Length: 211
Image 1 (tube, rainbow, N blue to C red):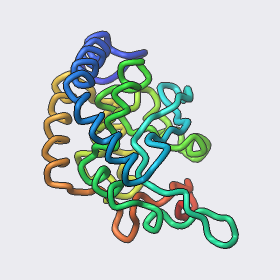
Image 2 (cartoon, rainbow, N blue to C red; image 1 turned 180 degrees about the vertical axis):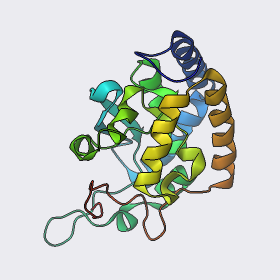
Image 3 (spheres, rainbow, N blue to C red; image 1 turned 45 degrees about the vertical axis):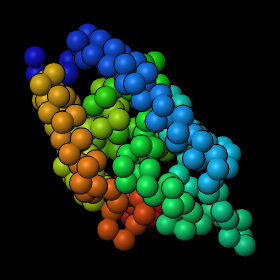
């Protein structure tokens, strides 16, 4: 089987649900440890949630471990990401441990292990028709773009890789991406875009940075 037609391939959904549930059970001691360390070092809240578009643009609530403080400047505006990210948050991002709560999204069927990363809702109106095809599949914890540069590549290249994945999906490709992700996490490659703590905001045909 190659490429997506409609909906979610049954084999992919069964694999996602079973392995995510098993992973959640096995990793529960680690999750509890992260919760405790986050509470001691960063205080509450432990988790960060945000509305993100999923399959066909349907919005769901994504969960992650919080990695930033909500510090504002004298004008009441959020400080840049690089000034808000905590030392613990930097470690969680570097090791991708901040993504672990997304296992709950996978179990619920809102996400998959592998697929285009769920981005901001406001980006929906900024995509070209070709770029919007990334929403023809479930978003993923990891994806083809993540193992080919992650945040170190341009938005245009990232979307090209996302759409390539939509057109060339196979169960074998998913397994390959999962294996490559493990290597990327170990090596820590491509976590941030050069000059930014995270990723520059996608402005469509315009340029800009996130706050």
